[in-house]
Structure formats: structure tokens, C-alpha cells
Length: 166
Length: 347
Image (cartoon, each protein chain N blue to C red):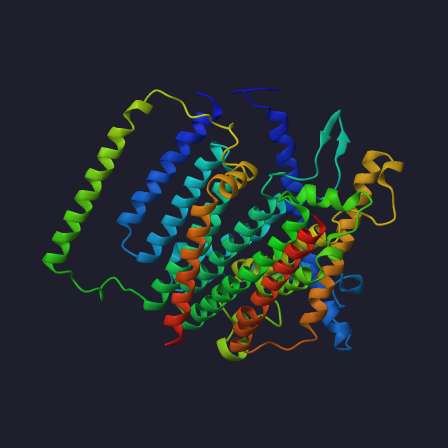
């Protein structure tokens, strides 16, 4: 076992523990904080793959921006443990069905990944995640999808402003 | 010295470097608090702290001792763990920035070349940006965990202020990156040293935007709405006592020093001493001169921060938001377009 493997297993265990804590925490604020730790663990995995840009953008966007908004909303609506209304049986039932179908989806995905078993990921090498190759790929090969997605963001922004003005 | 296919001498070298940098930063921070009180005193035409030691030089030690010796109170209704984590997080986030700052040129000691930078990652500026966005959590968690409505309100203020000004800051940085063409702080500084102009010449507007946003990110007056005593009693650290309060207050000063170091590195040549050819002296001496130059630049910026704090009154909250969203962001966008147009016309 070399150092990279030790780091990999430690990070994976950390990510799994944090993800489980997201689910079993009673307090939604604690859940959000555990989720932030999950994002950090995932960024750690990106760094192991030498994808520094992805790692840091994952932290900036998810841990730095989206989770702050989550915290904001939860702090402002101030969810309390005892005042939370009991959910109806129907809602619980739909939740189980939705979760179950998602699980099947995941299992089929893992099954599709079977040919990859036994192959090793090029740890600490490869340049695809570095900023220069990524920028070249985005602005040469994928420039149209990239621009279209930016228009999508713009329309979302305009929509948010419009709703805010009402 | 290799074990597990790892160069341990490298690890030890970096560890020593980290410890030295963190300790020095904390020591400088200690004296920044003293400097702040002295600057305030000069601007308000009074002597300032002058009792502890010669010229009051032992005042920060007395302050620190006082903070440590105070009784520590953890409110009953608070979330205990988060209440404790909050100040630590604020401090960690502000100290983490120093990892990518190039303090000087390489030192040559014991046959090794020691880079005076903890990590020369090729995404240095993005790293700083990530750490800055992490800084919000210390404040938010502390404010929420205190279970006090004033603390919570102040934490929300701090967070929304930080988010708003981060955008303009990022846009100002993009314009800088367009001219430098790299995200590595080391390369940015090196580009400015070898007979070139400092980046401030190419990006004057970008620097002004960045400076204002840095002031807002550090929660310094005129942007210290989270600590507006007349509206919020004391701010997000209202329930804190003893060294936990000290950590919050300290983190603000560390932030100030770090943002000064970043501004000096990005816009003012970093460790570059102007009109001086570093290759004429021995490399170790050149490194020391560089370190001294960077420290002087940092002190000048910190003084500027203080000068503004004791001169300009605090904004109102709506003024702050208007400035952030309706003035800084369009200005930063304009700066970006202008830079792009200039680069295009040069091609």
C-alpha cells in the first residue's frame, strides 16, 4: 500500500461517514455542515487525480456559494425539531418509492461500470483536470455547448431578477 | 530519506516553513492591533496606549493575557460544538491564505533550494478565492450557534455582504488574469519583477475595485455592518468571551494582513524592490531583501486600511448593498470589457 492508496481510502471513508451523517443528523443545519465536509472529501479525490481546477471550483461553487445559500435559508426559516409537522403517510410512501427507484438507477449504473473493475486510475498524473487543457477543450471542442449553457445561466439570472422585482 | 516512496525531507522543510509563517503572522497580527490603536490615537490627536512597557510596546501582550485569563462562558442554549468550532474556523480560514503567497525568492541553505512559498499551485488565485468564500462559515456558524437573534442577524449580514462583494472581486481578478495569463501567484510576481511594470499600471481600476472589495470582505469600516454596535449590540461574536472572542477579533486582523499581502503580490510587484537588480547580490541576501520589501508593502497597506477606518463613517446597510450590486459589479464588468478590448487591439 503506498501513500496515495492510504490517502484514497482515508478520504473515501471520510466522505462516506460525512454523507451518512448528512442523512441521520436531526438538525438541518448540522446536515448542511456535514454536506460541506463531503464536498471537501470529493475535492480531495479530485486532487488525487491531479484535477486541481475541478477540485477548487467544486469548493468555490458548492461549498462556498450554494451551501452558504442553504445555510441562509435554513437559518431564516428556523426549522425546529419539535415544531416540524408530522408528514402524512402518503408523503412518506412517495418518498420511499422515489428513493427506491433512484437506488435501482444507481445499481444499474454500477453494473454498467463492471468492465472497469481491476483497472487503476492514473493517480497524480494526467493533465486533463489542469486549467490549460480544460480551457482549451472548453473553448475549442465544446464551445457551442459551453456558450449555450452560459445563455441558460443568463436566463436564470434574468428570471431571478424579475421574480425579485415583483 | 525516503519512506513509502516519499521524500520526507521535503515534508519536514514545508512543515517548518508553515510553522514559521503562521507564528510570524500571529506575531505581526499582535502588533497590528497595537498599531491600530496607535494610528487611531494619532488621527484623533491623543497619545494612545503608552503605559505597558516603553511607548506601550507591551500592550498587545497585556491584551492577549487579559483575553486568555478571562472566564470562558458557553451559553446554555447554544449549540455547544458549533459554538466552539466557529472561532476556530474563522481563524483557520484566514490563516490558510498564506499557503500560496510567495514571500520571497528561493533560499539556498544546507545544499537545498528552499522556496519561500508553501505551495506553488498553478491555481493559486482560485485557491485564495476558495479560502475567502470559506471565511463566511466561521462567522455564520458562530452567529447561529450563539442562539441570539442579534448574533444571527449580524452573521446573516456578514454573509450576504461577503457574497455580494465576492462577485465584484472575482470580476476584478478576471481582468487581472487576462493581462497576466496565469493563475499562479509566483509567476504573476516574477512577471512583474524582471524589468516590467507592476500590474497596477495595467489594472488601476481593477485594483481600486479589488481594494474596496477586500475591505468589505475583511468587515472593516466603512463596511463593518456586521459589528454595528448601535443596531446589533456587538455583532456575531456577542455571546463569545475569553480567547474565543479573541480569535474572532484576531481573525479580522489576519485577514487584513493576508489581503494586503495578496494585493501587494498581485498589483504591486510582491517581493520586488523597484530600481534594484537582485542578481547583483548573493541569492540569500536577495531573498532577505525581497522578504523585507514585501513586509514593508504589507505594512503600508495595513496602514491604509487603518487610515480609512478612522476617517470614514460606516455605511447604511442599503447603501452597502447598492454600492456592491449596482456600482461595483457594473464597474468591474466594464473594466473586464475594457481590458479585453485593449488586449484585442494589441494583437
